[in-house]
Image (cartoon, rainbow, N blue to C red; front, top):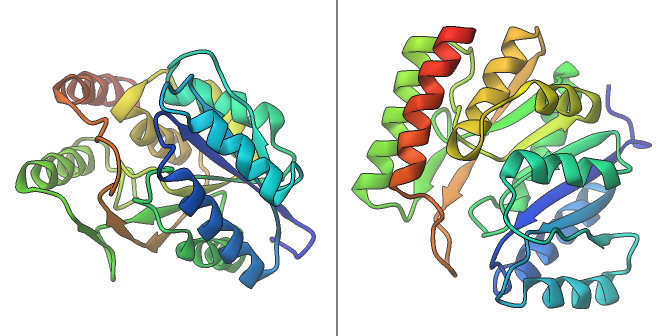
Length: 241
């Protein structure tokens, strides 16, 4: 069970998030100030040309290097490897992964922690598809892609979780390390494989309803190539799980 002595490492992979980074960091700091747990924010920037790293360095100066830790990489190398890179520097025994574009509101973090404590879950996943969960700011195309992806996954893989393509989650660090090592997918499919493998390996999964809000600044990184990759990845998981 999680105790007050536990520490939470928040991994924030970034690429061109200079405008969003100061606000998401402030909201994370506020959430942890209210719930009282020890934490750190690890920013994994993949060589953003927009000044994201400079913004992160300023945040290090403001909040201190014990709270904000910039651990950049030279270029875009994939989400899975970003987590591996971040975990090398994480000192917490729990890891929270979330997007830096404000689509995941840090106000849900205390609920993730409470849920984990409630059942000693290995994974707690934010879900848009049960309870008060939902999506705001998406056009019909993106809603159809997300719903369709999730429905196909439920039918083919029966993973026992309601939201497979989301990326706002809390993991026991050891569990996350094992799952990242086992996953072979990249891009859009990666988050789905993480949940599928977690269930395959017998890890317990809790869910917290969240509201997902489309990014305010910058451009979405979801494109046609990601959809094609998802279809290929889904078939791979169906054949191997």
